[in-house]
Image 1: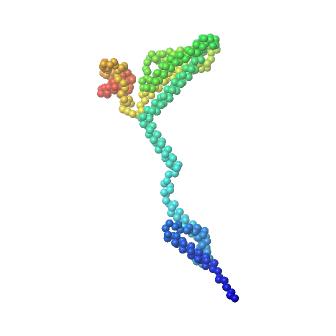
Image 2: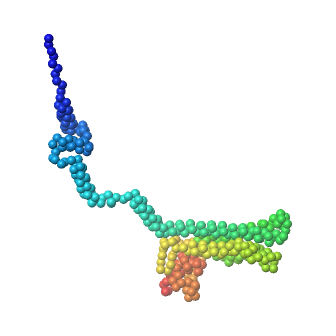
Length: 344
């Protein structure tokens, strides 16, 4: 009878050592072959555990505990941080807030530079002039509409309501206002085009219309005419015509100031000059084939000298001032200016 004795199994320690050797061999082979990534390095906890095991087996010097290793790691980290902390490169980078502020500053500088440009200043002046003229015309229209009720009461003269006389009385103020607005509108438009109207006839017509409006509004409320005089009622009915008079008087002055406004394109010691030359010196168009009338520059120069002596013109008037004072064209005004300079 044959008895079989079983072979003893492998030792677990030998199996573990064999697996460890196999892993090291595979790791070395993977590190030397291109394209094959090396296995991940053990993390700090695994390394610490391995170090503890080595310390227990007596492979590490005595006293090299986990706390010592952690403290050594913190000291090494602090030294590296101290080296990098002295580098100011991150502080030189612009944050988003700094970039936004810098962009706003550059934009403000460009806008300021653009505002100093003569073309931009001329555009701003034209825009403001249109705004002021529009506001003045709206104010004048409302003031004349305000006085319509007072004029209607004056024109109706106690007529029954909804009668023919009572209805036609409402038309008195509108046609007066329309006639006045025609004159004021023409002055405003031509003033914005640099050709203000200076006519005594139109001034008298404006004064007549405004006086009629003022009288018809205030007459029923004057002392001795009204049954019971009240200052507040009189002022309230005179408010519309007074505002209309103020607008009609102030608007031509404002437009004339805009027409003489210098935008910084040309500047001389004698004052601002206009840019391109104006129309011919002749006040009207010449017929075909007829030569233009000759302007007596000497007579205009003598007249300008007399105005300077009288104080109506400065000692060294500009061509624009001479054009306004003498009523001539810009070319003739420049000739008179040059003649005055040669004499002076």
